[in-house]
Amino acid sequence: MIFIFTFVQNNKKKMTKKLLFLLIPIFAVSCKVQRAPQTRNQTAQKYISLDRKDYIRNYKDLAIREMKRSGIPASITLAQAVLESDNGNSTLAQKANNHFGIKCHNGWKGGKVYHDDDKRNECFRKYKTVYESYVDHSDFIAKGQRYSSLFDLSPTDYKNWAKGLQRAGYATSRTYASMLIKIIEDNQLYVYDQGGSLALDQTNEYSSDSEQVHLADVDNFKIYAEKHRVFTKNRIDYIIVRKGDTFKTVTEELGMLPWELYKYNEVDGDIKLVEGQVLYIQPKRNKAEHGFDFHEVKEGETMYSISQLYGIKIKKLYEKNLMNEDTEPEIGQKLWLRDIKEHTDVIEETPLIEDFDN
Image (cartoon, rainbow, N blue to C red; front, top):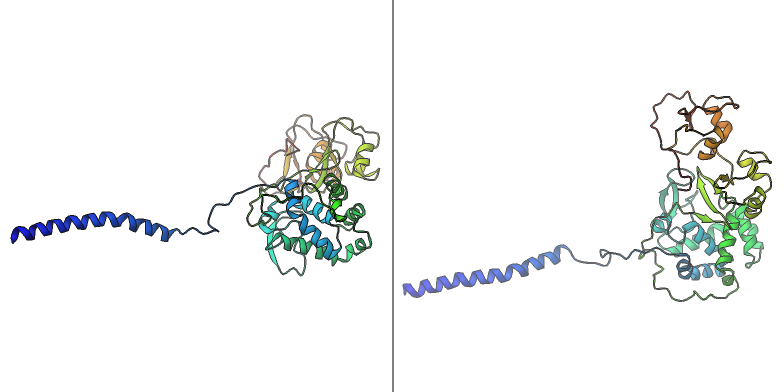
C-alpha cells in the first residue's frame, strides 16, 4: 500500500508539472492579447506626400461640387487649394484639414489651431474633413462683402476671378493672381469650369480622406511664378535675379507698375540688375523678423546690402544704429536690426543669413 501511494503521489507531481508547462505559454499569450488589443486606429499608417496631379485628381470633385453650389469656378477653388496648401502637404492641411489658409476671424465657432504666419501664433480654422474646408472656403467668399463683385463675372472667366481675389485682399502677395492663373493654365483646370474632364481624372490609389494620409510638413515651400521662384523673408516676397533680367522684363513678368521695383528696393532708375541679386517685389519693413536682433558687419558689406539681406528699409537701419545716412559701418560693428542702439537689454546673438534662398 505504501508503495502504491508513493507511486501515485510521484506521478501526480510529474503530471502537475507537465500541465503547468503547457498552461504557462497559453496564459502568457492570453495576457498579451488582453494587454495590447490591435485596433484600426492603433495600427501603423502608411505616410505619403501628394504631388500636384495627385492632389487635383483627389479633390477636383469637391471643387466641381462647390462650383455648382456657390458659383465659384472650380479652377479657382482648386488653384487656391493647391497654392495655399502646397498640394495638401502643409501643416495646416495635415493637422487641421485647412486647405485654404483661412484664419479664425471674428465669429468663428469651429475648431481652431495656432500657427505662425504674418504674426506669431495666429488662429486658423480646423475642420473635421477636407470637404468641410472646401465648403467653408466657398461660404467665406460668397458671404464676404469685399468679394461680392466677383459673382458678376462669368464662371469661366478665371483670369478676372484671380485678379479680383488679389484686389480684394485674399492674400498679401502682389503676385497672387498671376500664380493662380499659372496653376490653372499649366494644369488645364479651366476644363472643369466648362464641365469637361482631363486624362488624369481616373481613380487614384491614394485615399482622399486626409485622416488616412499623413502628409509631409513643407510649410517653407517655394512658389513658381512664370519664370522666377518667389521666396518670402521677413514676410516680404522677393525673387533672385537671373542672367539677362532687367527691371522692365521682371516688371512685365510679374504684372507690376514701372515704379514699384525701384521703390521697394530703394534704388534709382539707372541701376542695372546683377545675377544672384535679391529683388523685393513688396515693400521692405521697418525692422527684421523675430530672431534676428543684430548683425555683425563682414568685409565688403554695406548698409544697403545689409538692409536687403534682412528686408529692412535702409533709412530705418540708419535710425536704429544712430548713424548718418552718408556713412558706412566698420568691419566687426554690430548693427541693431529690431531695436535702437540705446537698447540696454542683453540680447543673444543670432545667426547671420548666409544663404538667402533657404
